[in-house]
Amino acid sequence: MSTVFTKIINGELPGRFVYRDDTVAAFLSIEPVRYGHTLIVPVAEVDKWTEIPQPTFNAMNEVAQLVGRAIIDVFGSERAGYLIAGFEVPHTHIHVFPADDMSGYDLSSAMAADATDPAEMDSAAQRLREALGVGEDGYPA
Image (cartoon, rainbow, N blue to C red; front, side, top):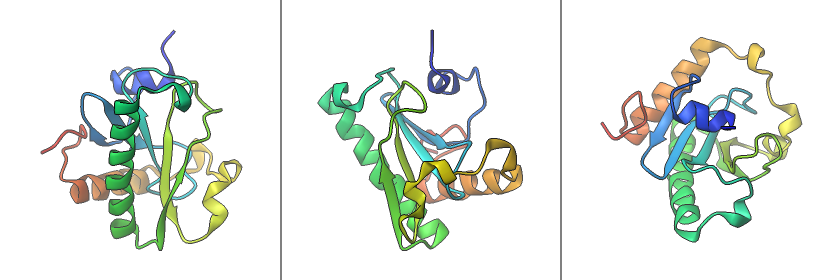
């Protein structure tokens, strides 16, 4: 059975993409620690990050750096947080989020999906896409 991330990548579920290529997709978390919280996901389903082929892992980290720089610029945060947890969905993903302190590293404090403001989520996605020079689908414009 496909993971929720595969369903988002395949367009079966909605997603706010901020980057996409043949190997990696990046879209906003529906349960962000802060607006702009992005998940960097391999297109291929791999449960554990320790099992990802090195070229895919390298590509994910390149995208994480691009998104992290954009997050700092767009949201004015001191840093971009980076976290691999891997228990929420059995599909490897890197969390990248605006960080001014360690609070974002506690994913249990994330906003519930129904507590986020859809307009704020759309704005965060659009601002990141503009900073990254990609279209609404996440592919280069």
